[in-house]
Length: 204
Image (cartoon, rainbow, N blue to C red):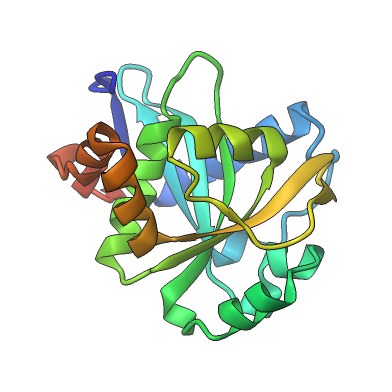
């Protein structure tokens, strides 16, 4: 993995959180996922994670975890979930899951894998065992190519927010086992708990 020493990764609060929300809105407007003036109903129920370029003190990457009851998560509200998977997700305890969302970055900042590592560490620290997501099919294929197919389809793909998206889930304990077996170097990278990653609070 490349050295990302010029970036800080962590949970966004205060002014940094507002910058993260703005980056998410701007990027989704640019690619047509949002319409001008559209209200995002999930902002208040979300924990935002950022890649902060330290020299410019600028947020250049963002993702978030949405915390709501399973039936109120975007994926469950907007996609037809396969019956067997619907039964499984509805058995999860509320504090064990979150929806991964708003995964985006500015061009020329290769921080995507590091962002995933950041939310993996946060999830492990806080007992989260499952991520639900609905991901643009191109990004879905990209992430599975990098992360050894840990994003498992759980429903019928359809056009959502302007592109064909795939409803999926990541079972984190199984994902770690799979990556360890199939991508040992990536597993080592994800296991690294350096000071930069473990500092999950960015102050104003």
